[in-house]
Length: 254
Length: 254
Image (tube, rainbow over all chains, first blue to last red; front, side, top):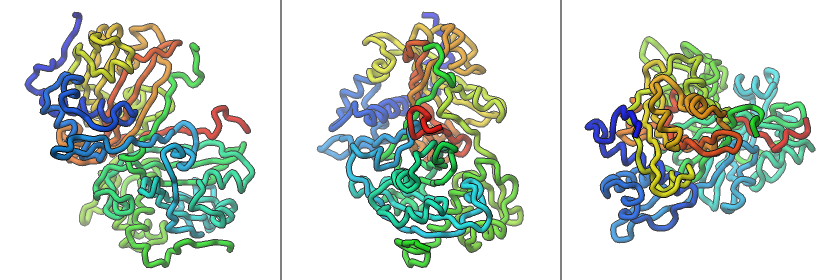
């Protein structure tokens, strides 16, 4: 074999934790993809990954800490739940996205008109002094909080919007209904952060839990007018994000 | 104003932490976008966001904990650094992506041929018993670790690939060079996780730090053959991910 091994597997710097990381990564995605459900057997995993039982146990500890599996003496190791998938390619509201996973309900904590921060006003192209509608919602999937959404809307659409049933409808659906136009697109940024204690309490996770932060500026109509700026905290143990990338802007070579 | 306030700002359930969250979210993205650089003034921020100095301080504490700003007595509050932006729309290697941010170097920890886990073999369409090339790299931007990448490659491309200079080249560029074909596309999943102690040490962050996990299955050539499956841990204090979503598959309505 014409292999140049920079640092081989026998290298002393390679430790058990390196193998546990590999196993946890492949297994995490296998759980996400629904390839592993129900109980997990340490012996089977040891054979599948070609690693010792100790490495498998370390990997399972990582996934247990992330809330993806439960481990208990006698009962064994079980997959808690498959994550819901939220696409970053297609612009869909959470309710549209999670329709197959269960009942989505919004707990509306704030719905009001206020003077937005200057940075928010600029992105929504609002002149200084113009108020925006601000909505704060905890979004629940089957009565469990999965995201905490802070939403700024342009006032001409936001004011009629909050007169509607925003507990049971996606903002996206209402924006289209009120404007009579289709949404155009959204610019999205994704970051990870440790949940501050108050956000953690709202999402029912321990403080410091890694969560996904999604910023999304959504535009409406043929001229792509920015109308909706959201800051969304998602529980990463309940939702994963998905996107397709293409090497070339036009799918050439097909 | 026709506003229905579900829970107004004066509601007793709204606490200082709620306002701090809003300020931290808008400010975090402002820093990312390069709108805030250098020193941050509490009084200015208090005026800009229309909140008390205490709320500003709480927001700054959140961002300091994320490593985005430095705070010190007398010296004040400073933006540490702007995050590098990695697009999820266009398929680019890290070196291609970060060319404007500085020097990208790969510390190759493993480059070897091994029997991949069954789940990996399936996704790369390798028959049982066929070995894959496995590469483990720490990727450094200006000598600081920004990601830890585990890469599985199909053997016909992976074996010649690791004979090349993989310390200074993106795997993507080498795959195209060796195959004489363009990459086609990639299916990507994004999650957040608390770094396990060993991964944290590799990335030079405290254990438990929230990091981004990106799984990426990349395909090559006109028939989109899957050739490269990667599990990437990214430091969220150094890299943010970006994607554009469209409401309609075809950009109709334009």
